[in-house]
Image 1 (cartoon, rainbow, N blue to C red):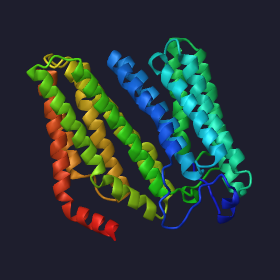
Image 2: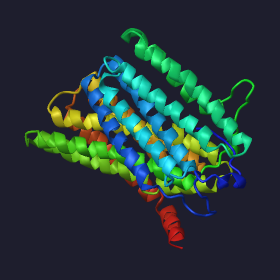
Image 3: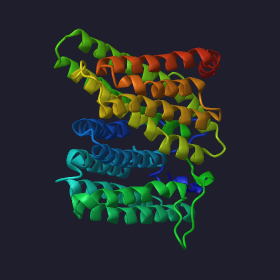
Image 4: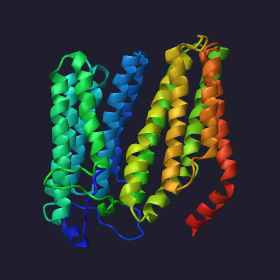
Length: 406
């Protein structure tokens, strides 16, 4: 994500969030309202993947997911800086919400009849938000404005490619959009370098770590909520056979285990780490901007796996189904492991590595067992990982929450 300088003098600009040392910037109601659009977007992505489990279908959904995450996380960074209680900022968030709704509507046919709608909605959100920041920082130091000049140029270049892809043939669209997305994802890593304007520095980013950590944890809740909706609605339409009950209970316990792995103490440790970091911009860029997309992608894939297991519990898992049923938990564990390593400055959690190893071992027998049984085994692996980490960090947990009570 972008980096820039916000000096104390720049806080005279009434569009900026008031910052008080030691205080956690609250997540406002309008930010939560904005997130409702992305509940719909996550649902659209999971249903689109379920409808086409081919390699090409998976690539399409992967690209669309990366775009959805990128537009959400950049908005999260902007509202970390701007004060969403200000009228102009509220109008921006609502305009972005409308753009996000159009984007979400277009997702199932983004590579078909709604390609241009998706491309224009996405590019407008990215470029428009950055232009708003240029205006909002008009009274700020030059370094702040300069940073968003760079960001706007990066998004404008990518935006042209998004629109070209929307107008291109379906065969060429994936290439154009992959190039556009590659440019956008390279931006923060390249410090948004522009010839003649230079690049940014992570230490210059005035990020409120507690707010950003809470925003990302809320998106994880959104994705987990999609899993709950899928398992509930699919179970309601299914016959109450033993296999369906097994799949339903396994899906629920697996969702609980995923919640536990991330929220037990991982969120609190991550929030404290970024708040106390000497370079919060760098921690936020890697831990929250990049690594959280693995966590959310894993949850989306698990939601698809839940629907598969509830819809076809008796079936012997095929290759595409195995990829979803094992890949979802694997992405989730990998994302959590890397995130915890980054924010806690520790080794990769042994419990998560063991879980990943168990999922790899499960690939071979997965070819000969039912979808419901495979779901139950992956759930067991997630439960073991959650229990292992809970027991191994029990002393740290007591210290964390005793400090919080003080």
